Amino acid sequence: MKYKLIVFDVDGTITRHISSWRYIHEKLGLWDVLAKKYQEQFLAGKISYRRFCELDAAQWKGLEIKKMRNVFSGVRYSKNAKRVIEQLKNMGFKLAAVSTGLQFITDRIKEELGFDHVIGNRLNVRRGKLTGGVKINISHGAKGKTVRNILKRFNVKSSQMIAIGDSEGDIPMLKIAGYSIAFNSSSNELSDMADHVCRTTDFMEVYKIIKNVNK
Image 1 (tube, one colour):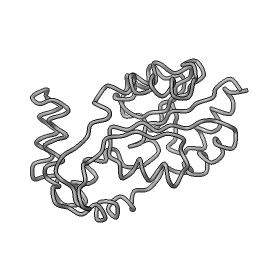
Image 2 (spheres, rainbow, N blue to C red; image 1 turned 45 degrees about the vertical axis):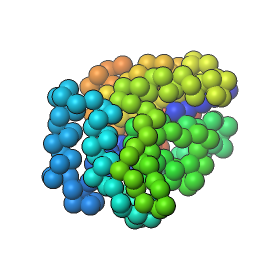
Image 3 (spheres, rainbow, N blue to C red; image 1 turned 90 degrees about the vertical axis):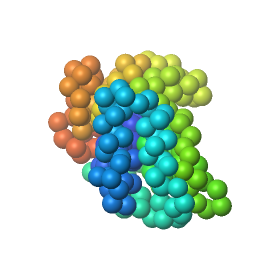
């Protein structure tokens, strides 16, 4: 088999929502309070990514972890994502998911879709409640480094990896891959450098492309 490992972005790729962080704020009615301001400050380079995450996480201090899981139970997968991922597993691929989002969706993906490896950022929990702290496992723009560690974990060469993402933050990992796919792309730069740009938001297109290039 030409390719052995497929690495997926999560938010906006496997799932329909674009940001786990924003999703929580919107569901809890907090987006227009401080969260939008923090995001604007980060995008303007006024605060670091770590500080941005810390400010966001602090707003959820004391919330029950059970409530947060319930909030994310409503997140929908992209069209035919579950079906295609099952088919890719049956074809023998190792599957990994890499996200700057939060554990509530990456844990779901590992459990429901049977991924071999998932990694994302995690809100800290004590006695069933959020502490207001956060563990940053992947910083903004650091997916390249994370993917290199995954390659070592599975003893796979970069030329044997397919990477799939939707945004500018996925560019570092797509550059490493032997074959890259832009799905639901929100970035012209990503679309310009990807080997294939999906014209639909249906994962069946992803499956057809992978099946074709892996002959």
